[in-house]
Image (cartoon, rainbow, N blue to C red; front, side, top):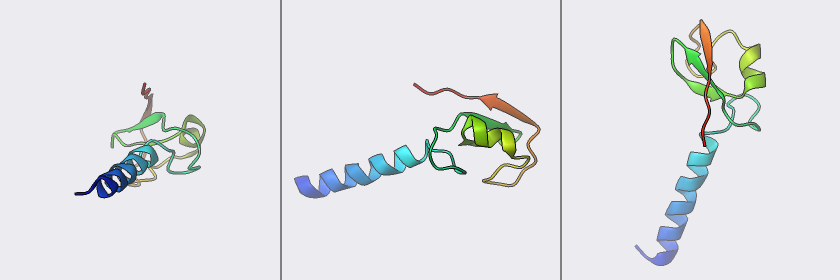
Length: 70
């Protein structure tokens, strides 16, 4: 692996990790809700209040847990 290849690999991985922390609905805000019972962390507070089923697995949402990351 050259320095350039290593840099590009790390850059792609960084973009992938950042996108995992963005709301799957609005694609703007950070994810903040973990849905129960499925456990998916996939929406911001605003979008999470508006859905009745998990946008990832379509499981009916029975509860929401505010989840914080540093």
